[in-house]
Amino acid sequence: MDAQTWRVGCRCLLLLALVGSTRSEGLQSCEEVRKLFQWRLVGPVKGLQDSPRAGPDLQVCIAKNPACCTRKMEESYQITARQDMQQVLQTSSSTLKFLISRNTAAFQETLETLIRQAENYTSILFCNTYRNMALEAAASVQEFFTDVGLYLFGADVNPEEFVNRFFDSLFPLVYNHLINPGDSSLEYSECIRMARRDISPFGNIPKRVLGQMGRSLLPSRTFLQALNLGIEVINTTDHLHFSKECSRALLRMQYCPHCQGLTLSKPCMGYCLNVVRGCLAHMAELNPHWHMYILSLEELSDAMHGTYDVEHVLLNFHLLVNDAVVQAYLDGQKLLEQVNKICGRPIRTPTQSPRCSFDGSKEKRGMKIFIRNGEETLANRRKEFINSLRLYRTFYGGLADQLCANELAAGDGLPCWNGEDIVKSYTQRVVGNGIKAQSGNPEVKVKGTDPVINQIIDKLKHVIQLLQGRSPKPSKWELHMGSGGDMAELVSGGCDDEDGCRGSGSGEVKRTLKVTDWMPDEMNLSDVKQIHQTDGSSTLDTTGAGCTATTETMALALMGAVMLLPGLW
Image (cartoon, rainbow, N blue to C red; front, side):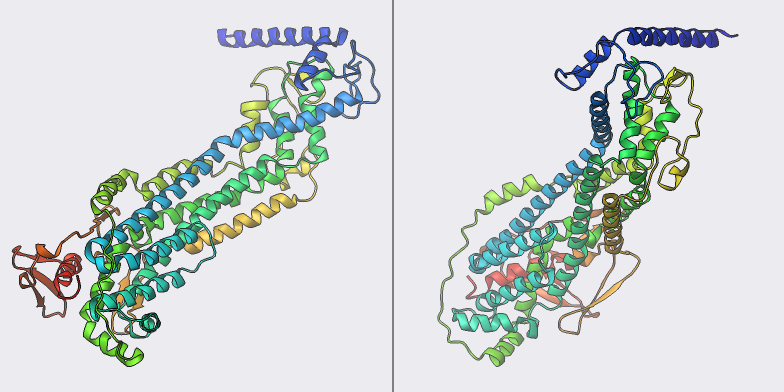
């Protein structure tokens, strides 16, 4: 016999001696049992025994020898055993619950910040570039981003409606201030608003905005809804209702040893597994659906990039608004004729619209606070969260094993309680997890199904379908026709140059958020000339600056020219 085996043997003999001593003393007196019972139930209880008695009235903790328990003590212990199990369930899930709830709150807060930031960028665009219409546009801008927030957080609003409503309200402002300057009646402005969808003054840009909003807002909305369901699942399983059979088995495992004076005993591992796997058999049925739930969250999160990334779409919205205004200005003569044909010629009275009172310098300082480095993006937050959540994919399948190993059962090789006595090891068959495996469980009879668990499974199935349905397929391309019918836009799952971002080669998105602050005296129309290329595209050559602007800066250069035209300011 080697030294290690000898030490283990001596330890077992010593523990057996200690347990035997505890049991012997317990059989002579119930003092220790009384103290523990009163402490565990927080307060004195009438009718506690001073010494062991033969108790034929016990229903579960039946023993051949006299016991320290009464029927009322047994009933109290059964309630306590259920409470203990709920407590260990809540403790075991607390880290997972905190992970999901903390990140849900963080995502909501980040989205709220992004919405405010995007609204600020759009307001600054109007105040710095189109000051004449800034105050009139403020209400529409605010309403648009309010609707964006409502939709993201689950309200029953339609993105197509609020996108169209924004551009409907924008057209009368652009017409009255840039195309045909002057004051007009409310009726005439309403006619212009109603005509917007027929004459398409902004080209395909409203459809581009709607496409980007649809591709980015809906996945983010679904992602948040799924996280809230995850919290609901955990809250439900934390307060699981235990069957009568389970309650009796928990009592036998946890507190029946007390009735024999064995207040320090712990159940054998195999015995604990049979009892807890039986009690959590219905909960274990969640495991494949929970696993698929986390996998679907991961797939959706991975796909939310480029034009599917709500952060990119919101923070570049003001650039598309500017593109829309410039598009309408360039088509001004044609739009003037179309509006006159539909609404008639207005009676114009020159007017000076109130200037924007927006404090640009203050907002620019504020904008710097919002700019985050690459590690602080919403996409990286999601990635970190998913990496942590992935560790819990088999949480419900291994929960019984985790509870017994970490909380309830005796350690390997130690004397333990088998439901009747202190033994060296548990000799009964140990069943697996799940309802089907419980047919041979010697400790707990599992009958039927749990309607609460079934309801949660149905909800998980539903949200899994939503998550998988909202996962964009970057390999598929969609053709979006411009509203005029003569322009087409190819949109991939990634972010292209036309959307205002560049690929870094690693899948990340490089964002350049530009808010112009040119003043009329900073540029002269003679410095700007348009170059028409052979392929039909165009750039702007700012000869005064000695450079050729790319497609990305074309609209910004046009804005500077637009502001200098007579009658606009």
